Structures are given as structure tokens and as C-alpha cells.
Amino acid sequence: MTDALGLPGVLRVEDVAKKLVMGRSQTGKALKELTEARYLSVTPVAQPGKGRPKSRYDVTTKLKAALDASSTIPLPHHRLIESLIAPDKGSSATDRRHQLKIPSRLLLATLLALSDEKGVVRDAGISTLVVHTGMGPDRIRNHISKLRELGYIRRVVPGVSSSRLFGTVGSAYILNLKHDSYRESAYSGTLWLITLSAEDYRQLPFEAHRLVKLARTSGGNSLQSLCQTQRGLEDLRIDYDPKKFHSFASRLIEADPYRLAPRLQFELEMTASKILSELGETLSSATLTVDEQIQEQYFGASVAPKKLFEGEDEARTSLLNVLYQLAWQMAKERRDLIASLNSRGTSYLLHHPPGKLNPMTQLPGSKYFAVESICDATEKSSIVDIAINPDQPHLSTRTEFSHHSLESAILRRFGLG
Image (cartoon, rainbow, N blue to C red; front, side):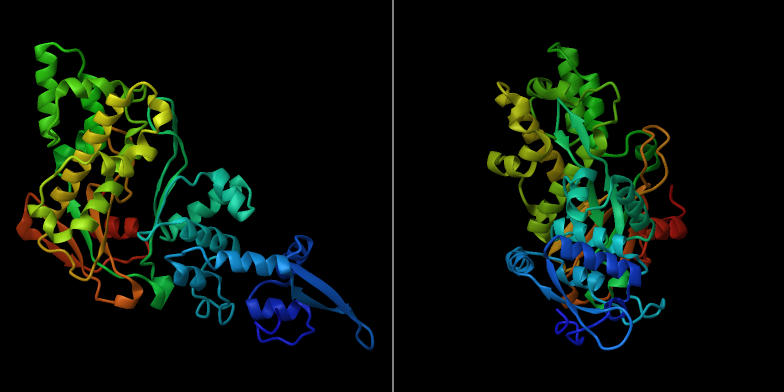
């Protein structure tokens, strides 16, 4: 172990603490815990004269086996993780890459390890993070708040527990892969912020809310009811039989009309992101085709687990079809609002920036939605961030946002709520 750190074979705890830029007590506690867990072995080394005896720490076969096993696990953001856990040059603010304490670094590294190529973590409740980090629930919540405040986490989507939809699913996180503190390892790419109309924002600004509202107002097979449902589906640009819509509409209805909508919107955004990433420039001319296998892949396990739809296969298929059509239209609409995609970006993420409470839904969210291209750090390109107002396209504005905190940058630049 000491060879890997460039230290002599026999050393004091202070030596390790200095090399890792950690406090002595914290280093001593960590070495003790690693030894008790049999990841390290310790051998006392007698020293001439007075003073504390020194110790030699060695890596055990248990740790070697764990490291060998972990080397086969794909980590798309390993450079960002290394940026977090590698020793800093010193303890001063200028020498530290990240102004984060060790527990926050550990939690963020864990989230990066759990995330996909876009920096999205799915189904990671507090209990899951407790198992991965060894920290208590309250400490994890505090560090999540800190990481959000500093812009490392862009958005947290609460988990839900429902017998009608989703089942039980943990929280989701959208991480900021472009944070300036990652320095040369940070990702690059373009961020488009597209304005919602005032009416859309005041009423029900997002597709999931509109779908929930349609489910609550539709019902029965009377001509009037079917016509009303048909108009609602057309407003969402969904081509579907209103009779089949009624077969699953009750799944979207709860006492709190907006409890499931934020998570459903997140799932729609993630699928729209995949569609946009896969089709890119060709999406404008592409034709929507019904593919039950793709629908199952995108929404089956996350939104409509089969165990919740036992004996209701047709209703489940109808739900997946409607959700897939809606996600497709979301991707196409966002694509059409953007004059041109970043040709170097191969991965796109649709998400809703944070903001104040919406006066109607009482859910937090800004008046903008975001489309973001994500380029690997090895393909550095100048970051151009563009704000677009669909009602006044000639007012498109190019600006540079601080990638520390998207929320703060938006509020500062545009005064969004």
C-alpha cells in the first residue's frame, strides 16, 4: 500500500493523512475500520527510543479480490470519480479540485458509479445509498442538499410507492457532468433552454400533467365522453382509440392529482432523450412506428411492472403504447424547436430545470425546459448555451451559463420562477 502512495514501508498515521490531505483523526479512524473489516492488515514495527510504535499496513487478499472484481464493472464516468477521490495537491482552496468534504465526495462518487452515460441515476432510494456508502439516512439527505446547492446534482426526482402505477421505485438523480470543478475531465456540449408559454406554465405545463388531467376528466363509453377523450389525445398528438384509453385511465387517478405526475414526466423525458439520441437530425422526417418490444424496453419495468397488471395485459399494452407515442412527440417537438443539433454530440438529455412552485400544481419547476447535448471530455468543444422563445424565435439568445448551478444561472440570467 505504501509503495502505491510513494511512502516508505513504515510510517505514521500523520504521514498517510498528509499524503491524502485528510485530518489525522479521520485517517486513523479510516485505517482502523479498514483493518477491522480485513481489507488491511497491520503489523507493529518496533522503533528505538521513546514514542508511539509505528505500524505497517498491507493490502489483504480480500481487498485485492474486491478490486479485481470491480475492475470488470463498466464505469462510464470513471474520470469524474477519480477526480473526486484522488488526493488533492494540498488543503488550501486553490489546491483542492472540489470544495467538498470526504462524505460528500463518497456519496457523489457513488451516484456517478450508479448513473448511466448521461449522468442519470434511476431507482436509488435513501436505503440503497445507505448500503453503498455506510452513512446514515440523515447524513445522506444533508449531503444530497449540499451537492444540489453546489450544482453537482441538477435535479432530484422523488421516488413513489403506488399499487396502481410504478409499484415502489426509489428516487432518481440527474447529475451535472459539466461541473467546472471536474476541470479537464468535465463533459462539454450545448444547452438549449426553451420557453414554455405563459398559459402552459400557469395551467398544466408538462405532458404528464396533461395526461393525468385527461384521465381524470374522461370516462365511460358515451359519445360525448369518447369525443372529449379523442380531443384530449389529439392535443397530446397521440393517435389512439379513446375506448382503449379508458381501459387504463384509472391507473393515473389518485386522490392527489399530481402525486405521480413528476415521476411519470421524468420517465417520459428519459425515453424522449433516448429517441432523440438515437435518431438525432433524422427525427424531423422519421415516421413513428408502433413497436411493442421497444415500448416494453423503455417503459415496461419502470412504469408498468407486470405484477401490477396481472390479468390486464391489454390495458398494460395500451398504456405503454400511449406513453411511447407521447415520448416520441416530446422528442420531435424539442428537436423541431432547435435550429440545429450539435453535430459533435451523440447523446442528448431532456430535463426540466428546477424553479419555484407552480401556482396551479404546487410543484417546483421553471418556465423553461432543457435539451442538452453531452460530449465526452475527450471531444472538447466550445460550450454554447442557447435560450429559445418559441413565441418569438427571432429573440434566440446565445449566452454562457455557469455550469456550477443551472438553477442559479437561469434565475440570474432570465429571472425565471
